[in-house]
View 1: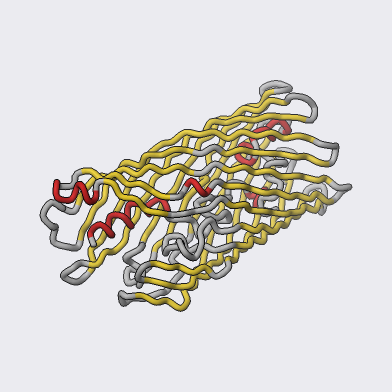
View 2 (view 1 turned 90 degrees about the horizontal axis):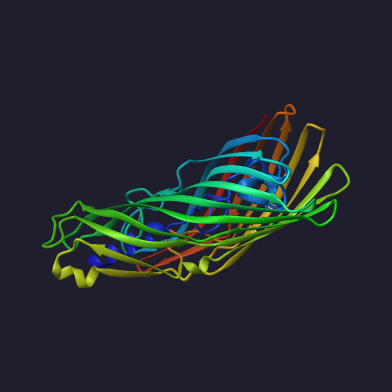
Length: 413
């Protein structure tokens, strides 16, 4: 039984996924309000503002003046748990995702006619969830908070009038907190609290090509990032067993997956612009999670020293389509539709991975207040197919939905 506590808890610190973000799996899409308006379609083939540092660093070559762009996305998610079945008594209230805010900021400046420099700060991965303490599936998860904050210095090079290249190394800090309950042999529950963090390094690279005066093609590659989370696990709410004093240290190796974003932007005769994009993510990197525990007494070291947790995720594609309508010289209206499959299935889904295939509809507005100042706002509605959770002693159907709102200000100088 103790082995089940450790294995499920520490391994799933990072396996927890984001049920509230517009991207599936661990990924978060909310790095730009201007891109959110078109459901992030055309993100790698457009350069509307400095947020192209993330979308496609090659797009910086299309920005004529120095500019600063930043904003905030907020997510209000809802979860409906249906037909629960479990061994333990408890409640199934759902709505375990707190109100979340996701900031982002970018800076780009021309160096000369061919070179641009930029900097981005954004959140590419993350999750926050918090079930009620009486949750019927509490032995598999209660509170989870995992986030990655990235700093990306970036350069771009204009090869000729039609082709640009971009590259940016990424410095990524990950930290995680997880709590859950565990049944005690003598009755009642123990409390498990796990924390860990690390810094990993990767890169983003892109190419943007004007195929014609009206059609632009772009491709962005986001590299994998390797982490080794060093942290501690604390057990409380029970009388410590011999050799198990309630605190120990643990190491968890985790690799965030690489992805490829490819898209097209078609500038029709005014006032329409059309966008289409696809993103491939190598979620199959998350086949299993290996946990190395330290500080255990000899009787427990062989049993708990190295633990493995199978995830069996699969590579997946997401697709998005969008359009923009230039209502006036100052105001652009945007809309988009995206389809994103879950990287997990009913056979492997847990209370920490209660996501299904999703559809996202978005609408947005860009307002050029002046030649120097632009305001972008966007709204998104996300709806998932029913997803079945199958734990050894808990089963339920999850239906997730979310509303998102983002705003962004761009200043050119």
